[in-house]
Length: 368
Image 1 (tube, rainbow, N blue to C red):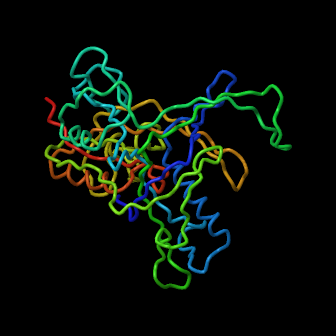
Image 2 (image 1 turned 90 degrees about the vertical axis):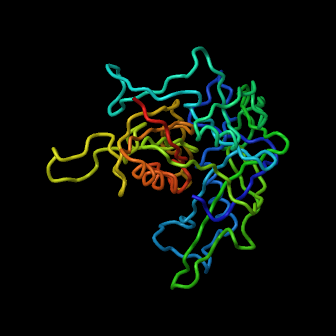
Image 3 (image 1 turned 60 degrees about the vertical axis):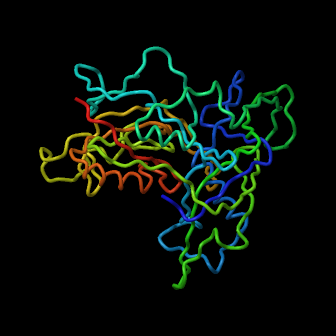
């Protein structure tokens, strides 16, 4: 982060964006989800293949085993009349407290508790200005009853026979669709730099005059116009002032050990097991910190379609955007060093090139 190019997507009509939950007879299709990072990445790389179905002279294999494998994306996020919105942090209105004698999973020693008693209004998205206030530790104004970014529409359809491409009698279904409101677009950053075979100047695929200007994203062939933006995504930043570092996810993250990042595992291959670092120790080079708290949302189940095998991909679970992790770094200098590692690149164990595991760091006050 940040990537070289910034774009907005403007859907031509409704978008059908499913997760991995099956469509049952009484299910509404659940297709009105906000686009995941992998759905955007797949839409772009598929557009590249449609635009250039044959290998081009300016392409290079490099270290990638498939065409356009250098593609990286970040987003998408809602943009309303140029104003960016980010996923609401799950610890809004909460404070960090120590916990003893609880069933918190190892290695957690602290938990988040609401500052105010009673049921709190929930949010889905936070304007970037309010997000900066959250990073600084300030309270946010009460949210509106609903956001004004998009609507969920339900439509009735009839099943199609895959072989004959004709309707199937008595097989009706209902599905949910996402409709963006007037002035709302999907904002994201991307880059795809290819090194030509035999050497030469690197080719910026997005800078080519014949690059695609539309994407097909989600199911049912939803078309969206691809527009270039001059300014990058203006993500907020926070000054690191304490030894407690909070890392809040802007995008889902897939970790090999469920909710726990793989780089917080005992993964150092030391000759003697007793010398291994405890669970929760940050293993990133140059980092000195340990995980002490986490606020995790309901797992995001997602899948996809494998074009090479012609079959669905295995279902995976991701830590949702808005989840946060807190690290005790010992000193402010160590917290700043870890912040540079976490904030400057996606830290998902998988699919970092697709923008999974992007997050923003901020400080929390010391906890007695």
